Picture 1 (cartoon, helix red, strand yellow):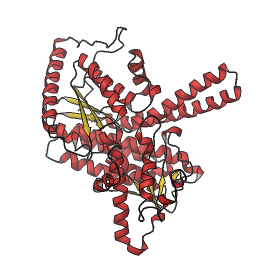
Picture 2 (spheres, rainbow, N blue to C red; picture 1 turned 135 degrees about the vertical axis):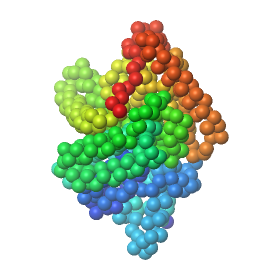
Picture 3 (cartoon, rainbow, N blue to C red; picture 1 turned 180 degrees about the horizontal axis):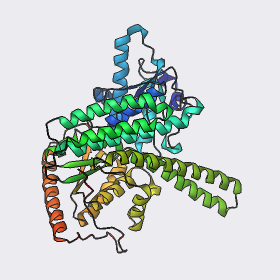
Picture 4 (cartoon, rainbow, N blue to C red; picture 1 turned 180 degrees about the vertical axis):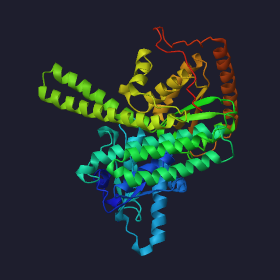
Length: 477
């Protein structure tokens, strides 16, 4: 009898924080750079972490789901089943499922992502090959604390090193997107990216465990210097497009059918929202929640609760300050040589949403980041916005409903790019039409700049707008 027939206790008992010691830890691929550097970080701390192949097991993910789930749920489920079945085939009788841990993050809020691990657990329990595999999960509810994963003395060090690794992964991606449309030779930017990713993986694995950040940052700066030589300065600036939306789908190139390359093939330069942005948003929002709880406790004169909430507030604000410090260090090393788009600060994004009563951070999910990030891109002189999300995604559907009329009033081209594993027959036509509008926007923007007239911005309500005139992002190269 399999474990599903015996009951669903494993959904709560065998999903959570487990020790990573003496286990083979399987990490799903989301952003190739961020995921690979995260694996390098874990390996540097002595964990046998392995990055799973992706998208080869999609048929397995679809076989064990109904189609009502988010598309990323099907992709990640298929990845882990495919990997475990491949391991069983490779090792034969020596295969032991209990020697593996499958890593999957969670998030709070009205989003199905928070239930991925439960569904994955139920499906894995129904398969003899996979039923003894543990699911190691971290959640945004406690800012992705890794308590119990390693020795207690290493918790903070691993978490902070992992953040730096993910931030560097974002930067490597942005260096690629900045250089590839302007490359001197075919494939030169991609070759540099592959070399950079391999190099940074080795350096982070070797030096990340003892917080050897100077060595890591020096290597990153050397990679940025090399990237400068890829850019052909004679190529005119191309229309700049910002991508927002659901984190997994906009980061996973196979799932979004290589959207960035498609846009580049039609003459665009693209900047995708980062993974670090979400990692900044989580402690920012948790600190806000603790602040509200502290104010409530003060009103009730519950000083014990007040003290606890203030400690929680201070913890999350300290974590956010540390993340900003490291982000500034990472981006500063690169922007000395190559101009890339930097991350938005959470306070700035929230003020943009609050000042015009557009959306509230209190509602959670990725929607405030998508809406606020798209507005920041528009005001920074981007020529178009793409919202990438799975079919049926509630937060991204809300984002689309809010963004479309705002960007229409700002006269910034906007398009939704929705995915469910099928190829939409009109995808090419939609992208071509969008890129025609984007090219017209760039032409009008450049003409306005040359004439000295700032584009007129109109708020979506009757309150005085706080929006600034857009300017083209700084270009060092």
